[in-house]
Image (cartoon, rainbow, N blue to C red; front, side, top):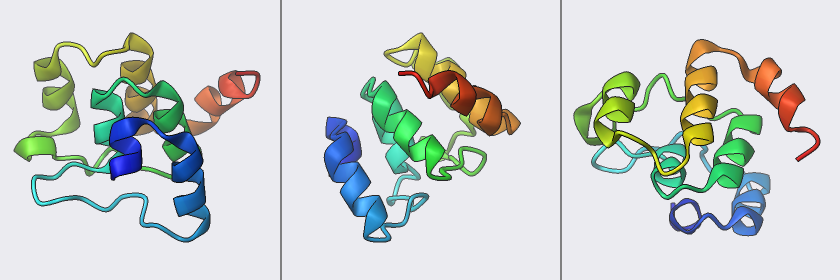
Length: 102
């Protein structure tokens, strides 16, 4: 999860190739994608999304995704909120197509 906190995509890619659990939660319900999102690390969020991260089971600090996003009143980057919402809505392919050139 440290790679997600720091937004280190190189380490994140390495860990994923080694079989790291992409949806593992810590003791307060945070996952790599929630930590990357809170840190404003869009590329790391996109990396996790491309590799199958889910947000429907996110319960950071006991909140569901919608409540968490509203209470955060803004993740550091509006695009991150859009990506998370798209993952939650099952729009993986739509966003993946738009990210290929980035």
